[in-house]
Every structure is written in C-alpha cells, then in structure tokens.
Length: 237
Image 1 (cartoon, one colour):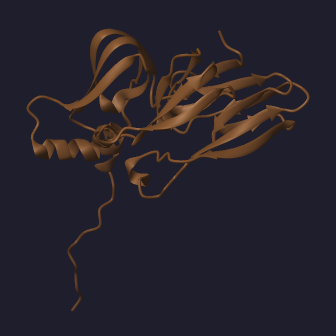
Image 2 (image 1 turned 180 degrees about the vertical axis):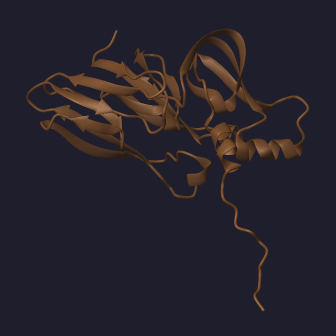
Image 3 (image 1 turned 120 degrees about the vertical axis):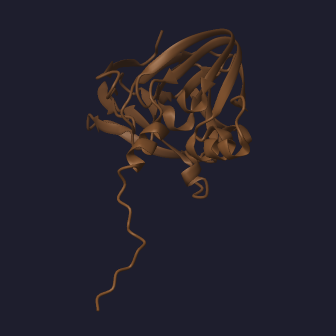
C-alpha cells in the first residue's frame, strides 16, 4: 500500500527515487536530495532542529533540513538521489507504530508522516555512526537509503548486528548496544572512533534493515592510500 506513486531506479548500487506527484500533492524530502523536477513543482524549506548527522559534525550544531515539494495545479515528476551510492527502500507506516531510521538514511516521506529525532546517548556514541536516530510516526509513505544494498531481516527472538550495518528497524524491536566478547578498553576506543567491535542486540518481533557495506571499512581502506607528508626536513649546504 502507498499513497504516493513512485519508482526506485538503478537499484541496488546507485538507486534513485522517482516520485509521481498528483496535482497539489506534497512530499517531504531531505534537503539536497532533489536531483530534477518539473518546473511547476514548488519547493518550500523548513528546519527540524536537534539533529547532527555524524560524530564529525557533533560540534557544528547541524539541524535536520527538510524541503516540501508540491505539484501546483497539475501532476509532476520529482527525481531524488541519496548522498551515497546504495539502495533505496520504501516502507508504509501505519498509525500506531513507528520506524527508527539512521539519521543519514532518511530520503523522503508523506506529509502525514512526522519525522522527529530520538537521542541515543552513549548508544549512538559507541556505534561510531550517528548520534541520533530519526523516529517516524503517523501514517503514510517513507523512503530511506543505505550505503550498498539493503537486506531485510524478519526478527523473531534475538538477533545480533554490527552497529555499522544498521539502516532502520521497526520500534517493536528492543535493542541494546554492547561490546563483543573479550574486547579491551583499547578496542573499545577503536570502536568509538572507527565503528568496530560493537554490536547491537535486538530482541522481540519486527523487521530490521541492514546495509551490505559499511562506510567506515571503505574509509579505512582508502586511508592507506592517503598522501602523507614526510616529517623529516632536508637542508641544502
């Protein structure tokens, strides 16, 4: 079931989202995700405060910027592109339940879906990912994205996931972030900075979405090829 007509194209490696708005229909979009649109679609920006997308931006006071796109008077097409190469997933949110999405994963939603932030405290800090989760409530469509392909896991009981691979989950699942067995404090520090060594233990019944790649693994791989300036100083006589 969906209220807004859409197509996910070029999935799963470089997915983009095509939205077909009806006349005077509105969709809420992550700022910067709009790639192209019909000229009669009107954009209006708004801010949802309190969201910082990553540890690297934690002191920047960044807010969640959202844009509303409305097809004025007649149907219109809107193309959306997530910030990193990967997949896009659709979910229809029913009244009475909620969806938790990593803060960098939100792409778009119906106007009837309320997007808010939920502070994780040390759970988010230990994950090496985002300090915040987005909490989506209400009724309507929501789309979220990943780095790499998206894997849907139906959880019934307990399930353990590396924190760096979590994209979204239904709030019927309980979760707790913990260290992997036998890790030292040094390893814990590495986990905070590099997203390694910590797992999220889910329990209950509900759906969980994972990404097939972890961005920190790519960063660590590329770091080996980063030019390093020599510390030795040479002098000419």
